Image (cartoon, rainbow, N blue to C red; front, top):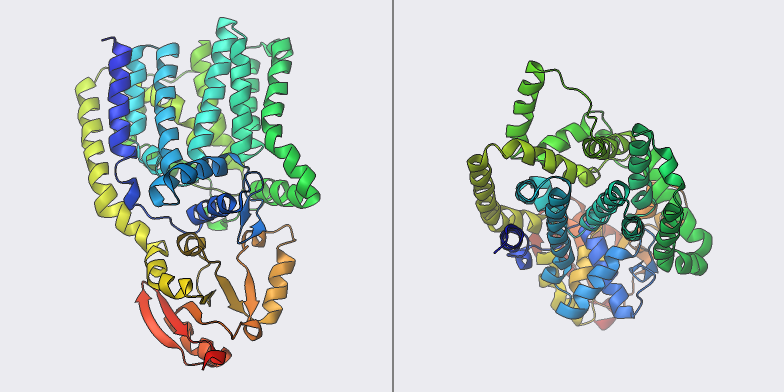
Length: 486
C-alpha cells in the first residue's frame, strides 16, 4: 500500500474518532447554533430552500450555503443533533484531506501527513469540527481557493484558476463578500511581492472571476430580486459593513485578541512550537523568505491575521483560515521529532474523546434549552402558547419544540423592537417575536420561561394562577391554564 493510501486511512480513522463519534450527545446551544439549526428546520418544513427564515420571518444574517448543508442533513437523517453536526464534521474531513494534499503538493507526503495530524488535534479545529456554524465550510472553500490558485500560478495550469474561483464562489455563498475579498487580497499581495502583478491580466483570471460571480449569483440574484433593499441593508449593511466598523462585543476589540486566540487555538502544539521558534530566532536573526512557496504561505497567514485584527467585531473563529500554512510550518519543525509528534497527537486525541463526553456534553447542556424543551413539550403539544419573560432569547427552544416562543414585554417595547429591526444597528439580530402583556391569548394555556428574580413581576403584569413546574439552571418554568377555560 502506498504512503498516500496509508496516510488517508490514518487521517480518516482519526477523523471518525474525533469528529463523528459522540456528535449525537452534543445538544444545540444558544444563541448562534440555535439560530442556524432553527432556520434550517423552518426552511425544510416550509419547503423553502432559497430564502432563510426564522420564527416565520425572513432572516438576512448569513448566505445560503450552510443552511443548504443543514437542510440536506435534516432531510436524510431527520431533525436531530447528529444531523445538525454532520456537515461541520464532513467539512472537517475535507479540511484535513485538503491539508494533506496541500502539504504533498507544496512540500512532500510526510509533511502533509504531519501537518494534518497537527491540525486535527488542535483545540480550534476540534471545536469548529463540531460547531453548528459556517466557519468550517468557509475554511475549506477559502483554503482550497488559495492552494488551487498557487498551483495554477506556479505550474501554469490555468484550469486551477477556475477551481479556485468556484471555491471562492462557495465561500461567498457561505459567509459573504469576505469569501472572495480575503483570498483576493492574499493573492494580490503575493503577486506584488513577486513583482508579477501582470499575472492578474491573464485572460483566465477574468474567466475565473466570471465563474465566481456565476456561482455566488445562484443565490444572491434571486435573493435581491425577491427582497431588494431589505436584503441589501440588513445583509450588507449590518452583517458586513457594521461588523467591520462597529464592534458587536467592544470588550473583545483589543490589539492582543487574536494573539491569544492563536496560542490557545493551536494548543497543544503552540506550547512546544512557539518557544522553540523564539529560541531559534534569538540564535539566528529571522529573515523574509525568497522562495515563492514560502512567501505565499507567509502572506496567507499574516494577512488573515491582520485583516481580522483590524475589523472592529472579533470572534474566536475569524482567523481560522490561517491554519493550513501554520500547520505546515509546524510540521516542518516536528518532522525532526517524529516520536514527540505521534505521542502528542495520540495523547491529545485520547483527551478529546474523553472530554467530549465528560466535559463538552455537560457544558453544552447548560447553554441550551434542551432539558426545558423536554419538560414543556407535552403542554405545547396540547396547545399551550410559549412565552419568555426577562430571560435570554433562545432559538434552541423553537428548534427542540417546533413552537415559536414570544417575548413578553410592554406594548411600547414591542413597537421599539419593530423599529430597531429596520435600523442599521446590532438590534437587528434580535428577531424573536415579541408580544405585549395585554395581547396574550387568554383562550390558550400558557407556558412561561423566566428567572427566579422576575417571577413576582410576571404575576403582577399577568395576574393568574401560575403553577411552578420546574427549575432548570437559572431558568424557571411556569404554567397557567387558560382563564376562559375555567
